[in-house]
Image 1: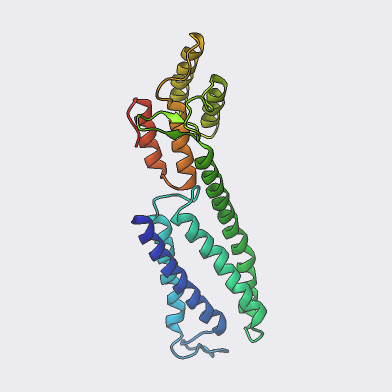
Image 2 (image 1 turned 180 degrees about the vertical axis):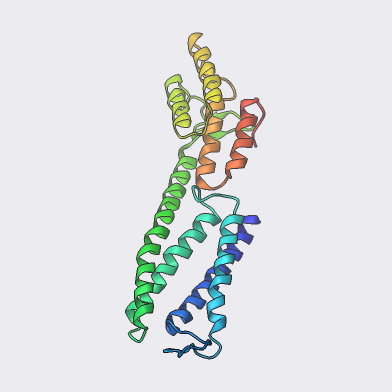
Length: 242
């Protein structure tokens, strides 16, 4: 619900910001009032168009801040960032290319903003798409839990991907991506060492596989960073994760 509200506020702000900037670019540089001779007076009622982008920018920033997920994972933050920067920059570029009557100073300013905004927005957008694709692949090929929390392969057999070497590789991957603290890594590695020393297979509840599943869900946007940490702590305590 919070993500939806953040998207609504942020997208509304982007619309107001875009409408206001469009009118400001049409007006160009102008001035009113004072004891000096004004070379180019502002049109009547133009003050509202200068305030509208400010209000829109504030709403956009509020949407970015209100989102539960940061810019490093899929969510409202990445959407608003991409739409605001890449979409706004693209709109300015189209205006520059299709409106010859635009004042020269406004044309120059819009061109500079478009050149800066488009790469800023596309960078975050591409990262978000890659994260979503990787998350979906991880969920499609990752372990599947049965009712008792036992991670199994897609064929339902417990032996799929649960040999000590595969589990050690998964553990190292979790550590390298920052999903595990040093203490958690040491504790899980001790589990692997114990099972390997006496020739046993993975325990009934594979904590490494469960945490990897939580990490995949976080990468896909299904879990926030806070929800991932809560679930991970539950796995480390041996609790069942739904």
